[in-house]
Length: 304
Ligand code: NAP
Image 1 (cartoon, rainbow, N blue to C red):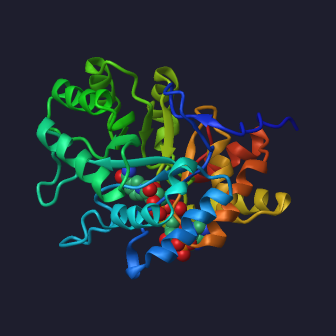
Image 2: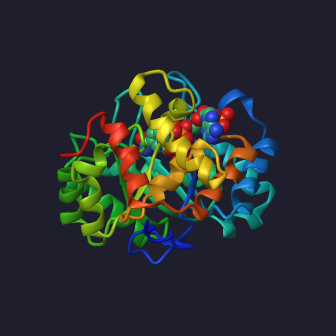
């Protein structure tokens, strides 16, 4: 049985020229449970030591509906202030544009303010990747593009990305933007397979955007599947995982990485061991048949 192409050792952040690991680590849950800066530093080290160089956060991470806006960024900022050498080892990605209680704001004034606030909380001079977290329907893409270009031309941001955008929204922003959009960040996992067939990943390939997959384990649902469909997906992953001596979560990352769009799964675990283990996904190899078996299980019906 022929194997799909092995994943590359590094990927590029779109056409930005910034090299990244084929797996990222996400900090959505970093500020949960009153984690100390020392504990956060241990997780950052676990990711970097495992060769995971793309670290993804957002200004809204830590917000609980009332308070905590900026907390995950501020915690990472504490880690970086205590150990400045870490900054050069990571490609730092954050996001903005969700503004409680509005819910979204991508007016040029707010984008500029959000980027300045993130720089201050993270205690860095430059953000490597700034992503629009969710689309603001009330913002004209030409104005958004102008604000983003300002952030790049002033050196505050190196590369730009979008998240949770429709294809048309991405296309419209790209039309007005004087530089390529480097990344798109939809939810993709063996339990959320729409991007494989709805054109999102085809658009990413056509536009040279690196797809960053959020919640690659369905937010943890893949580890405790409840429905017959989710259990069938888990069973197909387990079959391949056992053959290759890895766990189900690693198989899920490996399944995403094997796609030709160069999907970068954002590992959401806040356990040092699980973060380190995630890197084993790079050694996985998939046959075409095994890859499709997971997809068919997720579809719940055979392919035509
Ligand atoms: P996920 O990997 O789908 O889920 C992670 C959760 O699964 C954690 O709570 C983790 O708990 C749990 N888990 C249970 N067993 C696990 C195992 N064996 N291995 C790994 N994890 C296990 O990812 P996510 O946290 O939902 O999202 C990942 C990242 O995507 C976020 O950090 C953020 O950067 C990004 N994100 C972006 C958006 C967006 O709108 N752009 C939305 C959501 C997330 P433990 O910590 O105990 O391991």
